[in-house]
Length: 261
Length: 262
Image 1 (spheres, helix red, strand yellow):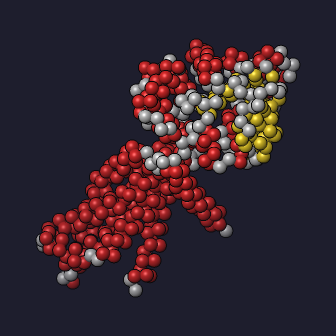
Image 2 (cartoon, chains in turn brown, orange):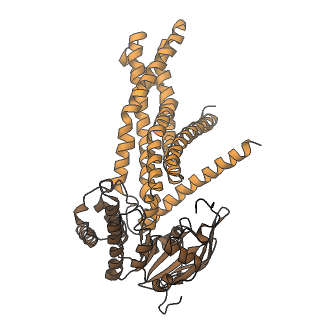
């Protein structure tokens, strides 16, 4: 699928293997500014790896990854760190620093990377906490928060530097349906309020269709489908159709014993 | 042939630890170039309190008992020859130059090294370290530098405490068992000590601190496999740090004897 605007992120022929296992094989993907791309795929299909490649935490074996025209694979540590300041990452299990309270978790990048005063930092922290409806948790430790609350704090931390691109790794996994919907709505409202581009990795179909303005599916190390949510729903591809329906009969479970499927 | 993979693996770890040090210094340099202090002072003071101040009771108590035992056993061996008066210098030189730094190194590796590995290992498993990296903050500067610096600076201080407590233990038992008065023990111990013994002991303590800090952080940051991985890495960290400290101590002594004690 092509877009008119200059891409925010562009992956060309990206290959990555761990030992002998091929994770990504010739992945091509282009994400336009303000898009909300949902990347679907089975567990272990390389979805989260894709996010780590974009952040430059992993290096591909070959291929090109560009962030606003800048080649990520050739960046040194300093340039990578500068680029990362323009990207927010929201982790599946939040990855809040357990020894710091909520305020300090959010303030950490501001204190380390900006010259803002303490009062300004406190105001920015409160603004982001209010945006995710968690202002009252300011002084709490991560261990005192529920899974859903931690996710919302993780979201607030992901947007604390007003990023141009936000990466979400399984944002609604393991949450009850109501909290899951709340997180999805937050993702949509954040992308609209701060105008950020979003890449959401998930295998929760309801969330995916709620959030996405575009969808891509990873299967057997490749992007096998890249289209609008409407076209995804109507897809005649047996893999995509089975993934969306959750049916046990089909190519996704090929190779498993009959009694299991 | 069996040794070859072990040597190769040891060399790989050694080079990784050297790179960890280089990258940490680079990240600190980057931050300083932006006009910032190279590490967070709050974390540094927290770590000095935990690893330094928190280790004083253990180091003091163990050193006191070892000093006491050393004086008692050597005194009884020397008594038949009428040489008990050598006990103060034996304890003083033995601890200042060798046993003080070495015992402190072993105790700190077990107490502080294990804590560093477990802490950083858990942070690695829960993706906290990766989150810090993803924010462009430099996890080595933020997490490794204050820890390594804390143990690097405080190990010599602990080593001095260890030697002093060992001498106190030796002095108390000597006054009781060999009729050496406390003042006489102190005078004799100070007379026998030369500046080289003190400098050698302090100098090697700095290196022990650096080794313990780097090994512990390296093991923590390379944890794989969840809670079990953290446990394995912590054990491995303590064993590696203690072995490396003893190995380095041997090398240091050989070089020192070869250069100055001929």
